[in-house]
Image (tube, rainbow over all chains, first blue to last red):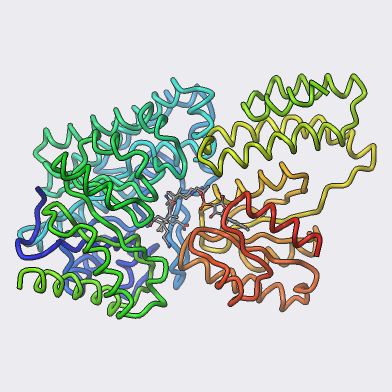
Length: 338
Length: 211
Ligand code: B12
C-alpha cells in the first residue's frame, strides 16, 4: 500500500525547519543554500533514520515566491521560520489574475534550489528510502498569493474568481512537481490551509477537491503512485473528500479521530499517517514520548497502511526526543511479532 | 425595534450593503448610536461568535460578518464620538516576534470589536520593543499576545519582560492565546490571563476590565 519497511510501522517525522538544526544553521540560511540544504537532509537521515525524507524547509512559500511574493528571511543566528510578507500579496482584484506569471521551475525563486537538492539526495539515498519534494496544495498557495483572509472572503463574494486563482496555482504546482519527478524524486503536497480550521467541508468540496484531484492524477500519470497529501488540524469532517483527492497517504493529525481514519482508510485501501502532537517536543521527556508513541501505535494496530508521524518538529527539538519515538516504534513492532 | 433585529440578522448573514443601509436608516429615525451598537452590532456579533463555536459558521462567513460590522462602525463612529460614547476599553493585539500567523489573532480582534471594545492591531512578527512603544503611545487597558508556534510562544515571555523592564507592567493586563499556549504557560511567564478561543477571549477581557 505504501513504500514501507516490512517488519514495522514506518516512522515519518515532520522535519522541515528543524532540518537546519542538524547542520548547526538556521532555516533562513539552509533553505537558500543547495550545499547546506543537501547536507541537512543527509544529516537528518544519518541521525534519525526516518522512513521518508521531505525536501522542504518553509514548505508553503516556494511557489508563491517564484510567482513574485516576497519571503521574509531572518538574519544570522535567528532561527525563525521564513514566511510570505503579508503586504506583498500579488492579487488585489480581478485584473490581476491575467498578470500573474507562470514561473519556470529551473529559474524562478528557490524552485531550482529545491530541485537541485532533491537531485543530490535522490542520488545519495534514493535507493534506500523515498525522497519527496515538498509542494504547496493549490488552496494554500492561493491563500499566500491573495492573502489568507481576503482569499477566504472571496470564496463567498467571488467564487468564480477563486476557481480561476486555484486553476493558476494548480498549474504552477504541477510544473514544479514535474521538475521533481523528472529527476527521479517523489512529491508530497502540503495543504493545511484547506483544513476545517479555516474552511467548511462544503467549501473543501467546492473549491479544493477538483484541482487537488487533478494535480494528484497528473502526478500519477507521471508514474508517482503514492502522493501524500498533508492537511493538518482536525480533518475528520473532510475525511470523505480528502480520500476522494486520491492522495495516498493522507494525514490524521493529532486533533483528528484515528478510529474514523482507520475505518475509512482500510475500506478505501489507503495509507494514513497518524501524528503525535509536537507542541512540547522541546521540553518533554523521552519517557513521555515513548508512552505517547505506544498509544498512537495502538490506534493503528494491525493495519498495514498505518504510518507513525509527528506534527511539525520545532527547530531545536533534541535528537534524543525524536529517537525516543523511533525506538518506541521499533520496540512495539518487536513485541507485536513476538 | 424591528430594524435592530434586521440589522443583527444582516450582520450575521454578512450583507454589508444592507447593514450600511439599515444603520443609516436607524440613525435617520433617531435611534441612538449606542442602541444601534449594543442591540444591533454587538447582539449580531454575539450570535456569530456562538455559531462559530458550535461549528455552524466557518471563518469565511465570520470574516464576511466582520467586514459588515466594520462598514456599520464607520458610519456610527462620528455619532458615537459626538455623543461622547466611549468604548468599553482599549485592547492592543499583536503576534509575537518570529511568528507570521495572524488569522486567529485577527479573529480575536474582530470578536472584541464586536463586543464593543476598541482594538489596536500591531500586526504580526512584533518585536518586544514595539509592544513597549505602542503601550506608551496608546495606553491600552489590555494587551493580547498571540503565538502559534512552540518556538515563538517563548517570545511572549520576552515581550512581557520588555514591558516590565520599561516599567509598564503594572499599567497593562496581559492576555495570551494561540494553539500551543495554555493556562499553565500563562502562569509560568507571568501573564494575567489565557483564553482558548475568540469567544472565551471576550469573556476574559470583560473579567480583566472589571477587576
Ligand atoms: C494558516 C496556517 C499557516 C499560515 C499562516 C497564515 C496567517 N496569515 O496566519 C502560514 C502558511 C503562513 C503558516 C506558516 C507556518 N506554519 Co502554520 N499553520 C496554519 C494552520 C493551518 C491554521 C492556523 C489558523 O489560522 N487557524 C485558524 C484560527 C482561527 O485558529 P487559531 O489560530 O488557533 O486561533 C484561535 C486560538 O488559538 C485563539 N487565539 C489565537 N491568538 C490569540 C491571542 C489571544 C490574546 C487570545 C486570547 C486567543 C488567541 O483564538 C483564535 C480564534 O478562536 C495551522 C494548523 C491548524 N490546522 O490549525 C498551522 C500551524 C499553526 N503551523 C505550523 C507550522 C509548523 C508552520 C511553519 C513553521 C511551517 C513551515 N515549516 O514553514 C510556518 C511558520 C511561519 C512563521 N514564521 O510563523 C504548526 C505549528 C506547530 C507548533 N506547535 O509549533 C501548525 C499547528 C501545523 C501543524 N499541525 O504542525 N501556517
